[in-house]
Amino acid sequence: MSNREITAEMLIKRYGDFAAVNEVSFKVSDGEIFGFLGPNGAGKSTIVSILTTLALPTGGRATVGGYDVVTQADDVRQIAGVALQEIGLDPLMKSLEMLTIQGQLFGMSRRQAQDRAMELLHLVKLEKFTDRAVGKYSGGMRRRLDLALALVHEPYVLFLDEPTTGLDPASRRDIWEEVRRLNRDKGVTIFLTTQYLEEADELADRLAIIDAGKIVAEGTPSSLKASLGGESINLTFLDAAAVETAKAQLNGLANKMQVDRNTLRLYLPGAAAAVPTAVAKLQGAGIDLVSLTLTQPTLDDVFLEVTGQRFSADVKTEDTAEEVA
Amino acid sequence: MATIQTTTTGAIKLAGKRTRHTARMPFLWQVSMMAWRAIRITLRTPAEFLPGVFISVFFLFIYQDTLGNASGFLPGLAGKSYLGFILPLSVISTALSGASLAGQSIVRDIDNGYFDKLSLTPVSRSALVLGPMLAGALLLAFQALIVVVLGVILGLRPETGVGGIFTLLGYALLTGLAFSGFTVGIALLTGSPGATAGSSFLFFPLSFLTATFVPLDLLSGWIQTAATYNPITYILEAMRHLMLEGWDIEIMTRGFLSCLLMAAVTYSFALYGMRVRVRRK
Image (cartoon, rainbow over all chains, first blue to last red; front, side, top):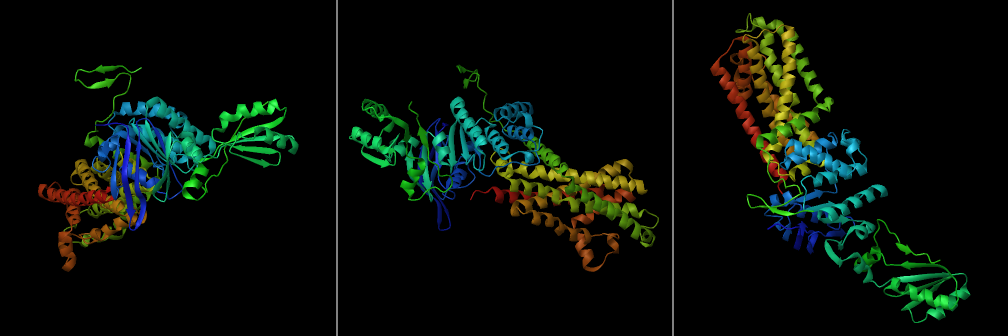
């Protein structure tokens, strides 16, 4: 019985003594975008190659769309689309040719395959470059074509292995847009690996953090961040005297208060919800506010918490600024 | 707005949604499509196949001009065209020097990752092997055609006429298929461009351990023994007979079977290579 789920139970992949994937279990539901976040060499690509039938697990069991990836590989290939980290394009071919061949290999007539190819080229905004050799495409164009190739046979489940690694921010946004659209409009279940915290945050409904072959945390991006309880309201005033007055006024609102020059930080869970109360109290006391920002813990903080190390790739602070007039 | 409707077969289909393509392409279609693709790609890199044509033409001139005048001294060849005797050898050399084209196209696919992409489609493994083999063979037959046309310009008048020339090209095609299978197998097993380019040289001894420059019965000792068991001997013999003597069913059949035997062996080897390559680890 076919569905759109992905399951893994105690999946193991060993190379000699080294366990690239060590007893990994998870379940991705129908229509979900599931992110696998981890640094280079954490085992992400190995899991993708097992799930997409390119490699065999050493132990454990996995299914894609209800089909066993070991014993029903052909069925898995029919319903799964794959865009690997190493883009598999022939530089001498043209995009239209490659998509047409792909369609025909999945059983379409030449005509059907060509129609489908044009449809996909429009979708990934490459319709103007059908006649250019793929070798002359930019990195972003190659990624988009690779994505189109993965979609030719209208897969129910899509595997994207680091789909935006090495792309410029604009191309990255394009891919994100496309992934969301596929998920929203076609109900495609998406399994995505990434080493970008921002990407996982942006796309994934749910994510697992993987480090050294093991899942170390799992949940929605916001629940993972909330679990740290590091949210804060940051209030900046004109001078130190105003800070002191404000501190006295707001006493009892937060778990912890911290003064940093003219800025007062209030640490409390559900910080956003407490903003109106804080602002009302300050107005009541006639204290002028220069700025107000909210800080949420980042996935990087989560990663630090669960693995004891920082992500080296892109450490960013994600401040959600909210100006108060 | 998808409405569920029941088709006459009783299957449930979502209206307004494309039906899934689960059908498989017929095998021969797969083969010809993969072959067509390989040919187009090769033609986009003329630097890969032009040297082969050049070498064959070169050999033809060299053999003709250095040995042509000596042919009168060779028993059995007196009064006959040495060009007709040596041209089949040139055709074989063409097949040899160009055979790695087929393997190279596979190595390139492995290298750029397109091979993985193909192997994740429902395409038949045999079609992935046969496609490039057939493409290689067709390219070699085309190169052989150039050699033959040149031969005709140089004065070759085959005993069997135009029909003979086409039959000769048929032999060239089958020989090319056989050699291509070998380089495809090496390509799949090693994934290395160097090993694949070098692999066709392994066949070079075969083209000399045969009735290369003189008829078989003029050979002696171990070379004659080797030549007797070398299938190329019989392919050469069939082609030469076409050029110099005329039609002979027995000789032609022997040549044809030798081609088929070689092609069957190398195809099996290439399939084995494919099995090793796509075996999941």
